[in-house]
Length: 327
Ligand SMILES: Cc1ncc(C[n+]2csc(CCOP(=O)(O)OP(=O)(O)O)c2C)c(N)n1
Image 1 (cartoon, rainbow, N blue to C red):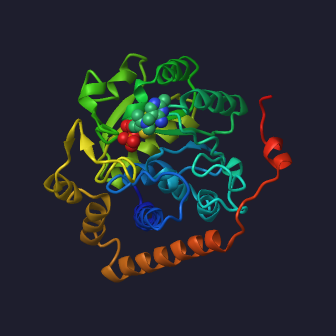
Image 2 (cartoon, protein in one colour):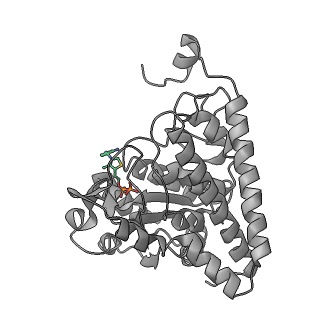
């Protein structure tokens, strides 16, 4: 499925926005202005932008935790200011400032981002089943890391999605790492997507550094889902340029990852690659690109101002209990 020029410009713009948001999050964490953790998305923003830029508002999205799903959500069109307010513990946050980054955006069909790796597989089957019954062409975009495919529920979800021909996209962002473990310790084959073969599910392996390749694959899978052709597995091979989460040493096994390795990875940064392409193909000029960066800075500033100027969340006991579903 080839992309139009307009689609390529949209992808490039979202890539720039995601890059600025990630930089802001990293800085805020250093400044003590975020609650909890931050898992930096340096070098890994292309899969989320590609997977989510052409989703509809009523499609379900389960974002990957890397970059805390900001890349995915902003590409889907979600207003990130409510997310940052949440992560800053403010009243105006999408869950009233109570969740840090384990939040929901019910209006935009993002639910229960959880601390459990692989939490999203079982609900994805439910969302997929609901979408199939509604028969309105909705899809479920399930974005997860390679590490989560060690979860039993990932396999149950793939089996059920295939048996019931549910419109789910299993979008695996394979950065070859899960905290300090390497993929070779966790998967018997090189490609995680080989798991899909066992269920007879169509699968593709793509360059996760190339935002355009990610979007082409996503669009093909979305089209399959919308037209009743069932689930698709996409494996985007990507990178983790920085540490797993801020404050954790960046180890590979027991070895520190070297500066040379990181420098090498930076040559394959998605924005570097996409910039070379849009300039070479005359899709954008350097002035256009500069403007996109200016707009992204302004957007980030507005998101931060909203979070910083909101009231700290101090829910009453009654309010807290009102949102608890289990006794
Ligand atoms: C069920 C469960 N096991 C372990 C963890 C600890 N944990 C947090 S992130 C992570 C690595 C996940 O790796 P991957 O899914 O490949 O994503 P990445 O962080 O590499 O982007 C682990 C093991 C967890 N949160 N939940």
